[in-house]
Amino acid sequence: MPPADIGDRLRDLPGGTAVALKLDPREFADHYFAVLNATLRDVGSEPNAHVIYITVTNPASFVWSLAQALDVPQDRLSFVDVISHIMMNYSNPLPNATYVETPRALEEIMLRVDYLLRKYPHPRSVVVVDSLNALAIHNPRELLSEFFHIFLTNLKSRNVLTLILVTSDEEAGELERMLNLLVDETVDVGGGR
Amino acid sequence: MESPEVPATVPPAGPRALMAPAIVLERCATGIEGLDDILGGGIPRGNMVLVSGSVGTGKTTLCLEFLVRGAERGERSLFLSVTEASEKLIQNLSTFEFFRADLVSDGSLVFVDLPALYDKLGLEHEEMTPDEIDILIRTVHDLVRTLGVKRLVLDSLTSVCYRIRRDEAIRDFMLRLGQSLSELGCTSLLVSEIGPTQGRYSMHGVEEAIVDGVILLWNTRRQGDILRVLQIVKMRGTAHSRAQYVIELTPIGLLMAPHLKGGRTEGV
Image 1 (cartoon, each protein chain N blue to C red):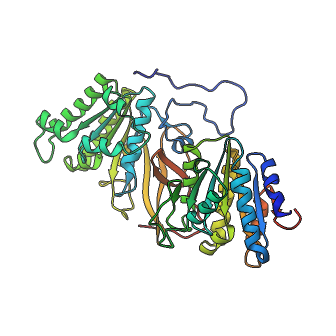
Image 2 (image 1 turned 45 degrees about the vertical axis):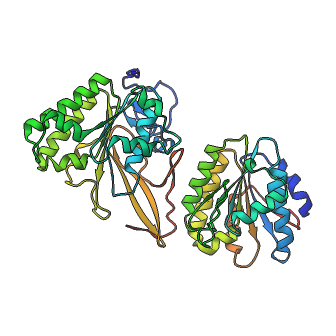
Image 3 (image 1 turned 120 degrees about the vertical axis):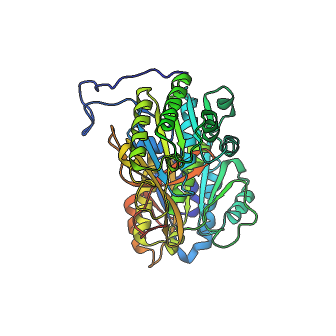
């Protein structure tokens, strides 16, 4: 799918859908920014929408600065930052972020998302996982499979739209196959669906 | 203030879930969503439950939320504190969004310091005599009956048992206390302090045999990171989950998530 069309596609998706957004590593930077644009601005600006962005690849402060450049209001976006603690980069916490100490605390990620969904109930709740690859660096495959199975099933039952970023490479092959079993749709960013 | 007394009910005829019990006991919903889910709706009304765990596992917070949620539903709730002064408890409680100070001021949520009660009752022996144990049970009974208390927390049973000491006397104390509270339709949580690697649910080892339920809390490690875990070990009168759950004490209350088993863990 052309990167410019992703926002429209995501806006059409109903709540309770889980989607893998597959990024091409050769064009990672372009695709990554296209996906951020689509998830933060296009989906995040829908009426009654609230985006919970799980940052493992980059700190929340990085994603938040991009969101500000895209004029995303603070009350529309919350972060579960899973990487800043482990990077010892925690001195200036964002007011709209909650911080998990390590990407290995997968249950903690589920609990923080649960907390934010309860604290900020919106008709259109969206959870973004950025990314499967970054979580896979810190967690064994069996644990990650179990996590995604429980996490996605729970979010589906709560009518939450879930978007999972995955960079397609040899290392991620097995995880990608696991994810294909759990998601409703895979969007090949830059390629065919 | 009084909640309506609902007797045990027989589910209506017709299709019902497989494995559903023939008789459904009235539940005391804890108000902690995940906990009620794994308890099949809550603790059977009048049950006496041990909340067992080592330091820092969330025992007191769980118990306080149980009382606050009950008081919000119009069930008068009583906290008997042995280890911490009520003022300090209320101060800590006020940091949670689920706490409402008006529940304390209107008498829906009552705090009693047990050491002050001991003094008032003249229970001065380091090891309580059988008469003193009797006085304590009668006093708690009268307090629950007079105030119409439907939820009670004793924090901690371990501290009370330090003054009873003998296993037979502890057994007798708990049997009588449990019977007394159950007769009044009062659901109780008794906090049990155990060491991190004790391998049992109470200091003396007799407490868990008497109570109707055991909720166990402990810390576990995964690759060096500590997780707080909760498990229902026993709950009479209801089918319940036996799985382990990771818990988080958030400003809006206790939240639970399934404990993932893909990684190896060890107790701490």
